Picture 1: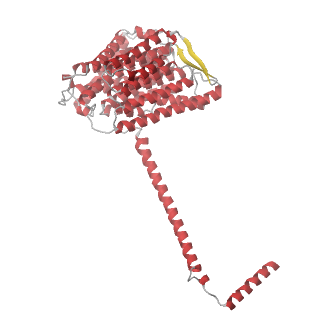
Picture 2 (picture 1 turned 180 degrees about the vertical axis):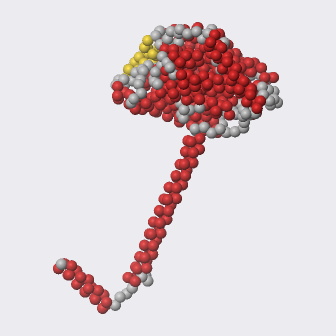
Length: 564
């Protein structure tokens, strides 16, 4: 039956057939059909467990269909569709096929009903996505891709260890709700946390996403981290430690985003902050909070993709995404500028934009459950998002000082993708009921209340005022040319330096021991030479009488010892 056809197989088939289609418009159109058909299949799939079969004594489930998996599957299909429009001009077979496989693996993981299937798709996303980084074909992109692959595959290895231990403890591989408290669940939790960019495990994101191709970054921003959010919501909803992890995630990237010069890295740090909101929602674990997590994941895929698209269009036309080298682009890229502003308004949760109707669900659930400090942290993070995402990026790229660059407007396909995404950001912000209808639980919530609108506008306007004051007084680090150190410095620089130092120390100690041993051996050989050499004492010709005397002495000593 067509309504039970696993959508991921559609992406695999598409990736296999794609190279056989003539490059250009026919291939790009064929690629677009894959996520479109996938969304239709997901929409008509009945709820329940489907696609079950037994492999080596284990029952695997390829399709576990419920509202949580359906909404993530739909937004992943939509993200793939929009990203492929954005990449219409790309003629690189590797990027085209790997984009399909990456999206397919993510969708397969969303519908996986067992931990073994989840692991296979989990690793599939890692292997497929790294080619979007390597497709840039530079030495830096190669090494960045290697670091990214090590982290992502490492997450899968930890997940597999957790699955094995979990099966040993429970005899089950079902992917259901779990409770922390055993090595198995901790391994699974950490594996999810790596892909979700938990604090101190996050640097692969800022390292890899800006290193990918222009279109690759847009695709990367949609799947891996949101898949991890889904996995946490499925497996660890209501786990209290996630509340504090998520709150930390909303705070620590703020400083880096403010001082960062590369605008794609700014968006990568901003992505960390938005993930923190979702993780808090998973940690709270109530129906309202999980609805907020799922809804915010949907709109985040859209507005973050829109921001990456607009900055990617600037990079595509100018060859740089550094704020210190941009400015004044509104003169020749006005449509890209407008789309960027829509994405900025959405991520900042302006009323009538998508972030406003989803972020408030998580904030309300935090207050309702008595997490007032966490609510305050999220409120502060909401204000700062406007500062470094909504104001800094458009200001440096399109306004600010005039860089003298006069590039062409973005290609038609990029404008179309940005236009469709911007339309969805506004449409969901104005009329969120269709989104609310897709959420896992019934939504009894009104985002457009007077107090909510007024409070949010006050927050946003005061943040805008702070930005203006900092700019006028010179406090804000304008167009700072620098390399910012994050936690990855510990394993990219400090770790190798320590290893090199220890290796040098061991080498010196070992060399000293070897030299001492050689000197001792040489000294012994010299002593033997002095005693037994041609001119040595023991090599001389002794008189016969002396020899008889020594023989008599030795014989006497032997007899004496024998007698005693």
